[in-house]
Image (tube, rainbow, N blue to C red; front, side, top):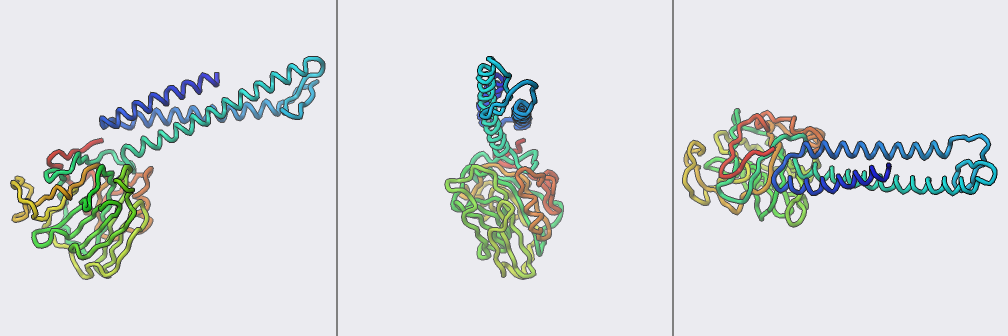
Length: 345
């Protein structure tokens, strides 16, 4: 029975691996897969526990009129059947140990697959993401805050899963005609970069992204206060860079343009997008700067968040997406995909 259970678990595991790859390629749903994996994990772990209890009870159960074998720990009947009984008990004990080892191995494989499925889909309790299918000057997402972004301090956080990273890949960008680079959160090969008030005010953290591009979700935050010009960059809930004197005394201007996956820098004229442009600032997307991949949990606050708050937002298995910003709130603030960008879940 134990062997049959283990064979069934392994057969189901193989089917799940194939189905997981198929659903990932098609952008499939993760909830059903995760439910199945968790159910299988529960079954396997329960069976391992029951087998361990069975082995213990077999070893400790008293039997009247029987002797004790010093090697196996099992009590034996007296007389000529003692040797046969010992061989049978030893054989069952070995089979039990083998079955337990196989079930434990299956449980570990299920746990690995479950973690992989969680990583492949959405982190931090997020129910949707924005897909940027390729790098293009036409693919980006406009963000339309309900309140002015005239700020002297802020924190912006987001989850990203890039498919490709160039020397400058724009994640979050805010600016106006006078200065397109008021806020920028960027990736550059294996580094993360954060600018306030212009490209001269740069905070950089190296080694944040795996070489060759990220295959995992990355949580990034940039925080800044005008009072001392202290700018800090966070990756995975940890402070990875901090620089004082960054745009000290500066106040972000209202009336700019906020977008995800691109910066509007006036480099490359294109046909104006109806109803989406700041006057005199309609064009200027550079395909070399475009983001390709998935993005979720984009939030912005009008204050510098604490270390504990940022670390909670960055928990892969947490509920960070439920903690929404008061300036830009994921799932609440209007975000308009363009040129092939789209919401997925």
